[in-house]
Amino acid sequence: MHLHLTNTLTKQKEVFTPEDMDNVRMYNCGVTPYDYAHIGNARNAVAFDVLFRILRQIYTPENVTYVRNFTDVDDKIIARAAEVNTTEKELSQKFIQAYQADMAALGCLTPTHEPLVTEEIPAICTIVNQLLANGYAYVTETSDVNYDISKKADYGKLSRKKLDELVAGVRIDEDNTKRNPGDFALWKAAKKGEPTWDLTLSDGTILKGRPGWHIECSAMSAKYLGKTFDIHTGGEDLQFPHHENEIAQSEGAHAKDCCDKKHVNYWLHNAFITVGGKRMGKSLGNFTTVRDALEHYDGRAIRLWLLQTHYRKPVDFSQDALKASQKRLRRLHNAIADLDEGIKPNPDDFVKILKPLADDMNTSKAIAQLDILRAAASKGEATAAATLKQGMMLLGLL
Ligand SMILES: [Zn+2]
Image (tube, rainbow, N blue to C red; front, top):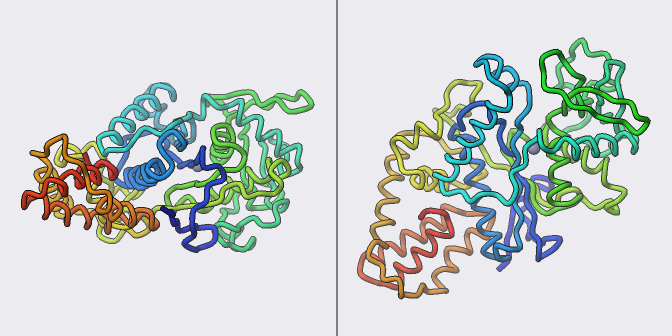
């Protein structure tokens, strides 16, 4: 079966062709673990867990590698750790564990690798040095290392912004050390009281500091998936600047070794959760944590509610919608409650569930198929119940 995916890079729905059928590789930008995950974070994890499951179904589980990182050092973590009088490590460990438990409750499989920035500093230093060697980066007089966007002729190709538009979006601050206003930090010079590592340059100079945000994903994806790979996913807010900068970094560091192949072939972005039409977010204060929602609803009901809408469209959060989803899930579960283990599913009916999923993850259509099977199962059709169970397993609803 052919998988079709909507690629942000081309704005087209395309047939998915992996670079290597025996190792299909995807990377999803993870969270900054400084607090409990909210429903908006959950949407990203659930959406691309479905993709992971579809790939495992089509290419077999052994042939799919999924990487999702944790940004366990950044401004928010440093500020929050100081606020609650703990170390960055303790704070991030606590919320990494909470995130993993919450996502498991929502039926998400554990990714193949979940790297942490603080454990990947050598890989980050390597790619910063590659960018310096290839002429894409420069050391400033304040001992930061910046990326020079004027060196990348196609900078802006993902978000389709022109250079002057990109620059207009950047705050003009007192920082005169940048060659271009749109340049961004690969390495930030040490500040008092912050966690610090050594970046050793090729001439032996040591720059004390910590990585900028964008470079971690270029470093980790190269380490765990290779210099080029198949699918990169994330929330739609990450298209610019994060993913744009990731492309610039990865291609700047690796293009020569990759015969100018694309860093990533398919870019996928999920839309937001909204509350009364406004985006749910930590900074807006209109969020519900996954923890809070799990006190009232089954994790799989939350998942079912998220999957009722296509991942590229916004979902509006409401208690009524979650209550309805809880009922819908219960009906599905009831229909398979008395299923005899020996009954075999119907492969043709199972394909009716898989097919819409392979069409750019049309989860709502797949769930509608589950409802059709549920109706048949509740009339005593055991094969329909067995197929329903298989479909619910595929979607992570069991
Ligand atoms: Zn990222």
